[in-house]
Image (cartoon, rainbow, N blue to C red):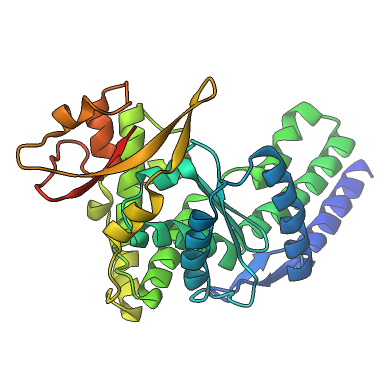
Length: 327
């Protein structure tokens, strides 16, 4: 009798799961979704308010407008361009970008400092738009709900909450490897549709890898997806190759445009102090070793400047090259 009750309860939970399946907006395949689009948007709105209460937006109208313009360009290429996407630059030194359900996309000032072109910014935003387009975060939340239902059933019937308790957490973990690769592929596709070279998706990942290597490792599983340089990763290159069907990059990457937009970007240094991103033009004979002497970077500043300028691990500036430094 006890076993019959247990099986019945689990079957009811399974019925809830099956009833909550809907077509993925990108692939058309069935995907677990216990949240309607209206509920998704409402959830995102509430979470957006909570995010801004904890981490304020960066107080620079020009940078916010610039990121929003590039974000809206990318969102218009997406499989869910009916959504009203919201793009926010957060005043946070962490190197990060993320998305909430309903089209709320965030990028930190910390990450913006390490990007080196408008196309790379578009790639970051395109990746996060891809998560929203494929409803990855909705699927995660749905698995969390179903996991909670099954956890409750098993805990009640078997009485072993410690053993079963981790099941409900599975839906709340980081994106899966497949979801991250899907978002990379969608980001590359949206880059191509917007006129950028989709190879900039690999540039973004290379930048994150360089930052992690400089800092001594990453706690982000996404960045560990690529055991080699992104240009040598077969999976990513296949995705970029597929994206070229939509365009090969007629739009300028916007290296100097991007750097000029972020000049003066403030980053907290701690103890109430801040530093700023400043630009300089390399002169003949300049090296990162001598440029580092005038920066406010303290930990291996020459190597840090290489990371900032996309020349990690052993690049040197070219005469006339526009560079970032920290003052």
